[in-house]
Length: 485
Image 1 (spheres, rainbow, N blue to C red):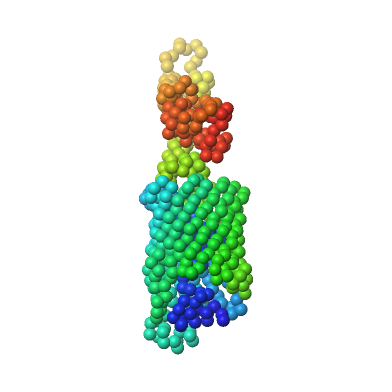
Image 2 (tube, rainbow, N blue to C red):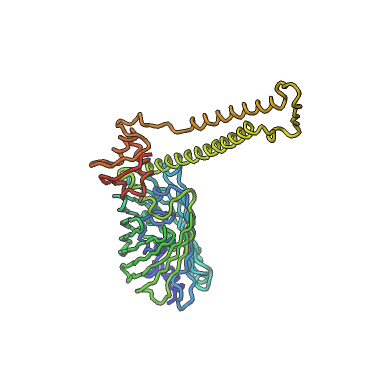
């Protein structure tokens, strides 16, 4: 029996088919699918709209993802089964008020059957390291008009379309910068999408975990849905400065489910293209597999790869909330912008000083009126004539020299006024800034900042000045030399 007949037979019988039920978990996004769909705890891009809405609380920049997939290619009946997903995330007040997500997932068998799920999601941080989220979904199911539906009284009496509202719930807890746990309840209200009789979408309880390192992340999940239990394992490894990623995973469970997954990702700037391949190794094996491709766009100044969040959390520790992480990021970015503006203005003033110095030297040493206004003529008095008083040219030259000297003096004052004021007086110790501090036993970045900068909360300035020489998490070693800005 082909897929078309299997779907319609299940509906005509008024029961969900054992091999095909309404709104099965077909996955969303090439990146998660390449990792075996073990994504509920990873949840670090726009695909989290589908897998775990709580993950939205971790997204601080807008994202757009769109993808398409051909499922179970190579079937003997030539069925064209396709799937598409579009997701958009919008942080509110830079994520301080949570993040909204909008998603659309479709599954279609050309000319015979179509499922659509429209999602409105929201997630935010409830407590430090604890995130929660929810999605409200509109599920719509429709059947095409063909020889099956035209003669069957079920469709003639009840139509070929049905819809229902569903709810997804999610939690995510960051145990440490490296370990994340999650729990989701998809279709928690078990919506009825039957045409003539009850056909509920069973709730799916999923428990997941993820482990992060600087160049890779691995995830796992256990899902219980109705009488089925499924497991998923997968991971992702980034190469070449997080430009290229390799992914792989495995799904297995009841109903002889065995799927091998793999894929690649390429990231250039804020754009990322992902590909996934799913090969059934048991169950429905008369197929050449499923192919997915996705494009993700990130907006704003976003660091590459999933490791950016890990680095921020290592800096601050597990007791710091993501809103505090984001506040520090904005503060550092603002500080950098101020420094750049200061440097640009300083360069302009110094260039003007060089120009003024050059003009003054030309006027004082040569007296050549090349710099005077066009048309002014200099007359040379006869040698035997008595010494005349100051001519108009001399007066003009002297006036211009005075003006240039005044402007030069003012520009130098502006330079001095723009120099940052040293904060040595605020420091309790005798340390002179800028300088080099030698780490002692028991020192931390906070204690060093308190001693050298006079404020333990300014430890991030020392971190940024020495990022390339510090250990993971900002740990320091006795005897280590740190630059104090």
